[in-house]
Length: 336
Image (cartoon, rainbow, N blue to C red; front, side, top):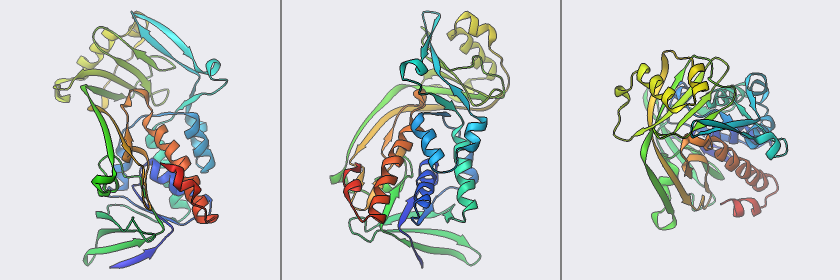
């Protein structure tokens, strides 16, 4: 078994793990990232694309915000649709100038990947059988396997801290002692049918639609790529929904103006997501810390998941920098 040494071992190379790694690198702290999926798989995951101020600021702090500002769509409000009429919520006015930017999570991940690669920082993809050990001590370890020319190779990362950024199904939270963890969950009795299409958005800002037929959301990724959602029964299968059926149902849930302006086309991605709310506490187990979906899940309707994960990363990065540089545990003691 080969052993390497780092200050922070990060499990998970999604946007939260990559952002944490980049912020630590900027502070001069060594961090290694281990991911069970391939880099191509990570980039293929379709996720929300609405970034709040905290996420924009962190991406700038990490030095990866340039393309976001060049290509992202700044939104200062959104529409709520009910009783067949739209009502605009002016975020710019109501929040004293705060805005959001529409920029796909896939693009955020790509920017962070590129920055990490350019800096020559270690990320292990396709790491099999990842396990975490001794996080109840000050010498935690992460073990994993890779497949090399000579067969299976075993590896160990010795570190001062472990950051569990490995999502809802990850190994970090699952490795915490059951007696030390409390979990709260609500599973909703409907699904969320999402379609991605290379069509211009129906509106320049988001539309959240309430109708007697169910909820709908008109979102976007760019001026030529749209993301739409429909509330559907949990019993529905994606195969039941042809593109034509989706567009017809969406029109029925929109106001007449939006329905008339809707541009349809072939879907390039279509899926039904079950919706759940999930929170676990605490978010710290000795020298292991949870962040993002490993600690909490929210339905994608409000595009909050990535922004909540970024907020975790903001506080966790500050706490780890304080612990590694200033040798103070005040931040990590208050993180959870």
